[in-house]
Length: 180
Image (cartoon, rainbow, N blue to C red; front, side, top):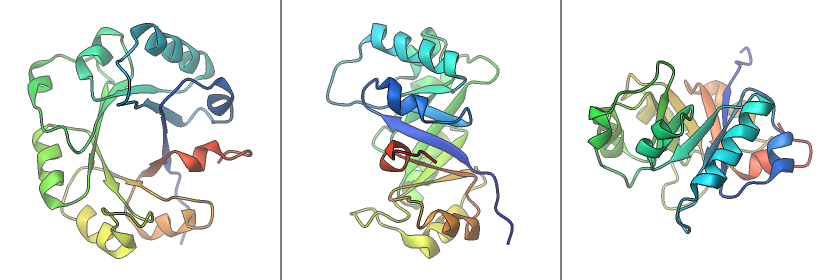
């Protein structure tokens, strides 16, 4: 089986230049920090740094601010069921990602008109653990492109070739010293 080129999404919760510097230009950065109030100046600082480095930058759980600050897109977590953004107008290449853990959440994300579904958790053994086979079955239940999320490492990265995912997302994978 051929290795496919996978899209990469790196979740950050603070601005760390050295972590972003390790990423190639194909890695999109998603800022996700639910513990603090959103600091627009910080978002603009990260956006400008990502633009300088050639990385796409998305904001989690705030589509309106993503549009206002002219970011590359937004990420809607699984707990967000809101559909207000359906009335917004977006720039041409604005991308909306949404995460899901089961068929009900997949259908919710489809009704939110997201572009790509982040399906989790493929490898991380938590409450939402799917494993490769259940991941494959769930990904067949949507026509949207699917991204693998959760527990991805250099050791299990090749297993993604056995799925129909178009990429992967995570945190610790991207924080390794050598990077992907």
